[in-house]
Image (tube, rainbow, N blue to C red; front, side, top):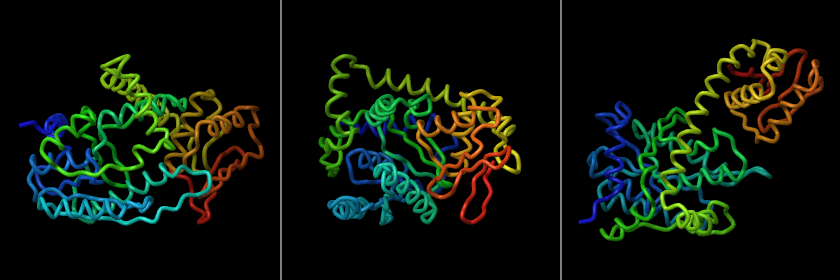
Length: 330
């Protein structure tokens, strides 16, 4: 009988990540009802037993089939004896913002809250090797640096929750082959075939060309992503050290920041923004750096309005001004 490739990948991941998978307690599985999360759910059930697994479903209600997906997920868990928890979200997207990005961030927050409420020590995500390839290609096409080209990490902390991706070595086709061979039901997300989304076009138009040119493209792009991740870790470590030097109680000290040079100043600014829950695209960050570096006085009237605060120069410092009067974090 055909073996579940997700089970082999999950077993390897657990062996290679000592201390990440708890010996006791629940493990959350982000379960969308699609092929990948279905294969992961069955693998986790086989590896650790039904009593330790809790399926976590996030219903964004962003498409007409959302409630049908939620019903399928709940019914699947009843049929195979797994605990199930669901969060229903109302996602509001500001003008000019990316629906995908806003929905993704809302999903992570909801999964973290579900995990905490249902005593899950961590949450496993079902992104696989093809998802990683698409992520790296998307980053390459938008001109990303090492941080973007590193792709999706195998594990991360977000909203106080540990997330892990044990299927990054798997191909989508092998997961689907197993599901069909074992007559395990799953749903297809219509967004995956929608040409309006760049990821969908990469999947259906670009990746088949890559496969013909370089059959080992998953492995080679994964290696490139790992090298970029290693480079980014070094960049972030250096930026953290510089940020400690630049950050004073009054804010970010501009003279110290300018002394770092344009490239390092940009990395410090990006890190400082992330620490304060703010995100700027590279073009806006680069423009901010240029303003700061332009003269010794440096952007005397600098002011940048962000969704939840204003970034403003005050004398020798750059600081956040929030509606609640809060101060920037280190």
